[in-house]
Length: 315
Image (tube, rainbow, N blue to C red):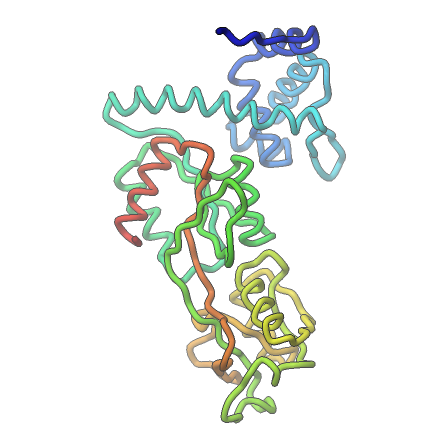
């Protein structure tokens, strides 16, 4: 028995309006939605900003709804824009898959792979990895993204289609629709200024750090999550006095006596002048690094090639 599909008058006019839109409209709209800025979107598309604005206005006129709220400082999606974005990405993905099929027959990959990465990742050599990929697939563009919200921001971008894959530190269960494959891990160490009361202690435990001011990273960064969980498990409250987003500067703040920190050892200067590293006994301070991909969207041929290379080099 055939299923009967009922389409309302509003649905009909909406679908009819979509038919007159060109692929270019979707490309421009997705670029502005992802960049949240017309100037950056124009640079990404290699067109003038006025051209991007004209296309977005034409879309809004055709659909009969505002897609973007524009102010002097930012661009935000309206409810209509939020509803259109996943459908626009799906349309672009369908065209991308068609192009991939043709490119594979012609014997060469093309397109762009959008990779999320952390500010400082010493567990794997990301530049070397991407360099090897570029040499093998010179016609594939690579776009690197770093989120000011750390791994949480990267996972959000992966979920909404902004990224194809991401290197993340995501302790615990990943969000719905995301798969994370563990790659490596490193134990975090306590970093103290020289002369600190615990610098010469026989053993340091979480309880010994109660009341200490900490230099740490904003909520959402993987190493912050690891430390927060360790203190919560020990029933110890923690005071984060200074938040930094560049992991390489954490030890410098400690050296200046502004607090203590729990950091991966590779970000601590080799000479360690003015610093002392200690292991925190009885605490789970293992900092994981994983490769995250969407569990619901099929990656492009170029993204699949990069994932294969990562498996070969890292897996």
